[in-house]
Length: 300
Image 1 (cartoon, rainbow, N blue to C red):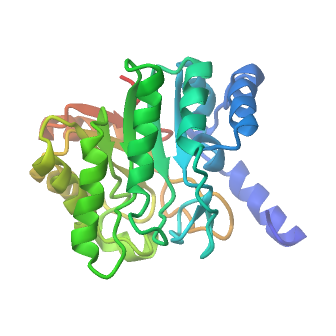
Image 2: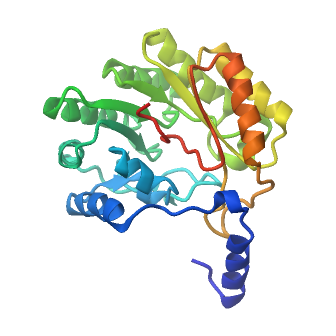
């Protein structure tokens, strides 16, 4: 929240200045409250709520939700992300996988996205939690499709080797899709993604394909940090060079005054053009629009 009346006034002015195409209802109260109640009762988390996703009502109504594993506190401090940061994340809940699986069953979800905060404090970066949760969901209903959106798993004394082992743990669980976001173009990585690297993220997706070429890979960018169209296209080419199959492009929207400011609001027409370019480059599934987020229409 803004810390002073002046900050509050600045924040309200920024919200009022949002382009018309970024204003939308978040959904009906019943669609939101049903999911919120189930999640709260089980003391689990969704990135839909923690990240205040503008599409959460629409996704809930389409029987899709994105669960946030391993607590709501991230060990990294990316300049764009609304998730809380801290060096002392929550201890793991040994029952979390079963709780998420039960929530999926109660809500009747057909397609589930599992994501997580970066847990650089854990020996395996949390890779086993992804695998356990996939198994728990499928134990209740093997037909449920589970997509993962993982961090880069880069931590430890032998970070490269450990990263590959952690990715292998998740790949062995056979997710329906493996998503890892590059988030922005190479030039802006240090400013936007503190603790992450562009090439390192490409290597995550490349390693997934090397381990199991049958698993679709996916990545996404949040536009508005000051990137150029040429840089975006170069990033899409880099992703296609490692056989990344699916792509999301959306508009970065500043969560608070403490986060990075928006440099540019890309128009719907510009998103359409970039989406067409992505399709021409060979991505099999492309979602490109201002309000698109990583899990938007993931079940399609």
